[in-house]
Image 1 (cartoon, rainbow, N blue to C red):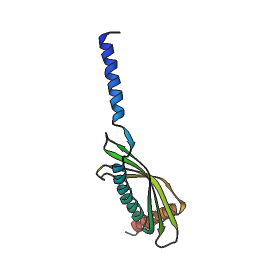
Image 2: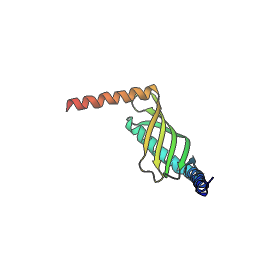
Image 3: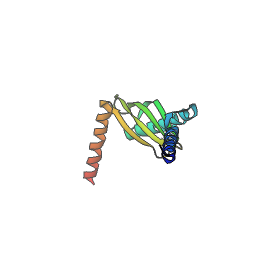
Length: 133
């Protein structure tokens, strides 16, 4: 093998090893505390979008931090009781957010039937308001 071929292979191996160093991994205890705060804020916003409620509970199931993108990936569950009806609501999903708490994006992976019905109700209500204008 030529000297140039060996150098290319060594360079390729170097980049492969260093690429893994900047990948996502489990949150440190400090990052976990920050992520819990972001999950709490996002959970409250989700509940507000569904019309509010009481007995709110936000559970963080997991947290990863990517040092390259400086972003968190947070698996979370949001539970609450309805303000008007006695229904119990649950929405699960994944929150991706910058390390400073900005640019949060929540992707829902599950909602129970009560949350689904409430979402449908608000959609119909919004449509009715648009027609009335």
